[in-house]
Length: 324
Image (cartoon, rainbow, N blue to C red; front, top):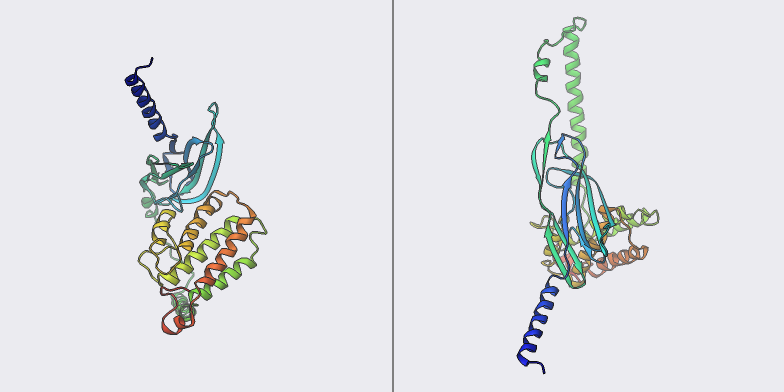
């Protein structure tokens, strides 16, 4: 016969071992690197983030958007590769081609990495990467430039020089006046209310036929800008302290949740638009054509459901909080 105390202890150890295994549902490894630790001003180099994770996991870099500090991102590529010799593992790679025209010692900040597998989520960050940017000269060129005095042209009479200077001054004044009038008219031109502006922008986007041409990156970039700008002007005003037009994905999630007057479903779908089209805009990936139809209809519904009522137009500026 089995001893009951022994059986109870064995079951407890088994349950404890199972619990520990479930906590560490899956592991990921993250590596960040550059093709050069020292570059010249203006030279391009690659910054790469590599993540090894289960092949069925969804891996994302939620804050890896736009430029990185002093470095301008010229191109972004993303690929997923099988890990040689390791079963059911995949290597997720993001490669950004960058440059800068500022010399100095820089540190590419850690980037957040998020991996989701079923109900389990692992969040970690890359290591910072140091890059030294140097100029191509040592400063001795200043001495060379001072060797000779400025040349005087004896063939040019002094009266002619004065005349040319006067004509140049007149041309500059005339050009300044023309530019002033041009920009003043542009500045004084009436600005359309948010709803009308968004309608015209969507109409123009559809007429460009970007999805028909297969140009998903430009289409979703423009659609995202139009809808973010509309929601910001419509519900946050013209100059909000924390807008959503230039917000990163993580900032967008936080700021959208605070918008009063916008239905919760539209808040969630605005974030979903960014999450779904991020790989299209920045990693040149593709999504189904049916998604283009869906998001086009969604944009029209959002505008129609938040269209200002007549009393709003008469009682307050279109751009203050409020919806149907």
